[in-house]
Structures are given as structure tokens and as C-alpha cells.
Image 1 (cartoon, rainbow, N blue to C red):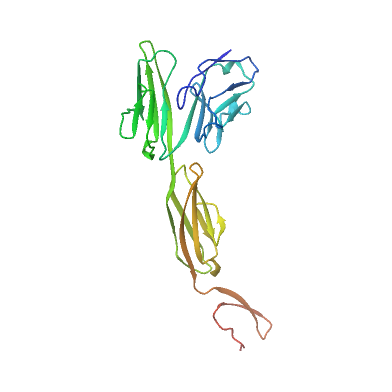
Image 2 (cartoon, rainbow, N blue to C red):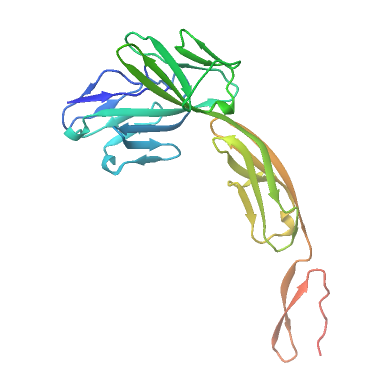
Amino acid sequence: MSYCLLGLTSGAGVLPHDPVDAAVGDTVMFTTSLDPTQTPLNFTSILWKFGSKDIITSADTNITAPEYEGRITLFVSTGSLQLRNVTMSDAGEYNVTITMADEEGTSLNVTCDASGSVSTREWMKNGSPLNSSENIIFYHQNQVLCFRSLSRKDSGRYSCNISNPVSSQEDTYYMVVTYGPENVEMSGSKEVQVQTAFRLSCSAESVPAASYVWIKNGTIIADSFEFTENLSEFSDSGEYICRATNDITMKTSEASHMVLITGKRLHLQTLNSPSGLQVRTKRARSARLLSNMH
């Protein structure tokens, strides 16, 4: 039986144009032409569909349709998909959409091509016609869309429509421009009463979202956007550093926050009374203990 693979992501050649043939019970491989050994590939998401139905979505985690559990393997380094134990109901059209991570400040060429004669090529961004500008250039008869220097505002859905007098075909490229982290900000109390709780929070402008670690005296003490101390001690005074990291751009940025623990620390002291009863009293660390009782 025949499997028709349709759908390109970043230009011609990502998927083969020819159908893939397989027999019932076979294993088939839907192989992309992307080679991570030649060009570093930063995928932010991969979506495989069978007709209009999602087979598997890969972003931070993989989400697989129940009927494909145990039958498919996604190779996240290339976007290729393996389908096992083929059945008659698997015949049809398969489509892959790969969202690439393109870093701010870099240049990028997106190619739109097809086999056969081509009369016109039209480029769109988010459904609106895309025109040349200081940063956008079209060349090779609109075959190549060139970004001189990517900025975060260039993120979006780009489509190219190729047509001739007989037919037309459209393909889509989802672009996410990565940047950051930058403008790291911290919030929280600067002066804290001893033996009370305090919380510090950290944020940064980053795509994809940054990961965070907290550092005090050269030691990592937390790995979240928030740091919480439930019962402060005088030793908790000092400089707290929040370090934000973008795992795609591999850039880091830091901010610091000073915390001062103040006040008198209360604790319990046990005294023996003349009658043999034990009396528990609260006192401040700076208070003097009574030497006798009446």
C-alpha cells in the first residue's frame, strides 16, 4: 500500500515528494533531509499529523496520540518518524511541521521551491502579503526570502504559494526568533526579621523561557524562579544572585539582591523551680537570665 508524504517546513527537500510503499506488518521510516551533523538544528517544536489528526507533538515533552503509543518513534535530532506494525488504516497523507529556533541578530535564508514549472511565488506572514524592506530581501525570482538580521518581531508564520496555470501549492514555515535572557529583575524584601520567612523572585526577557538558579557565597542554593527561606537565621544575610540561562542561545545574565536579617532571635529556656516544677520561658538572646526565684 502507498503512503503519501506531503509537507515541507523550511524549504524544498525536507520531506521526499515520492510516496512511501509498505506492506501490512512492516516498519516504515519517514525520513527528513535535515542533518544535525552538518548544521546545528534548534527545534522548538515538531508536529506529525496523519491527515488532520495529530500523531505526535514534541516541544518540552512528547505527546503521543493513544492509538500510536508503542508504534512510533520520533527522532528529535532530525524530525524523522518511524511507524511500526503498519496496518491498512495507516494508508494516507502524512505531514510534518517543524518550528526552528532562529537567534536574534543572525541572518537567515528561507527557500521556496517545487518540481515542475513555476509561474508565480507569493510570500505571506501571518496571512498578510510580505514585502521587501531594509531587513527583508527577495531574490532568485522570489525563490529565496532573506533576512539580513533577525529580530524578535520577525517571529511568526510564513507561507509561500507557488502556482502555474495548472495548479498551485502552499507551504508554511513557523519561525521563532530566540533571544535573551536580558533585563533580569529581582524582587523581595531587603530587610527581614530573624526567624521569619522571606521570598525572592526573579524574571528575565527570554525566548524560549529562561531557566534560573540562585547562588549565595558561590554555592547554588535553588533552581527555580523563586527562592524561599521559611525560617530565617542571621547567617542568611548576604548577597543573593539570580542567574538566568537560555538553553537555546546558551546565554546567561545575572542580577543580585542584598538581604539583611535583623532583630532579636527568641528561643525557649528551661528553668527549675524550688518546687521541682519545670517552667519554660521565652527570652531574647540579648536578655539576662534571672538568677533566683521567689
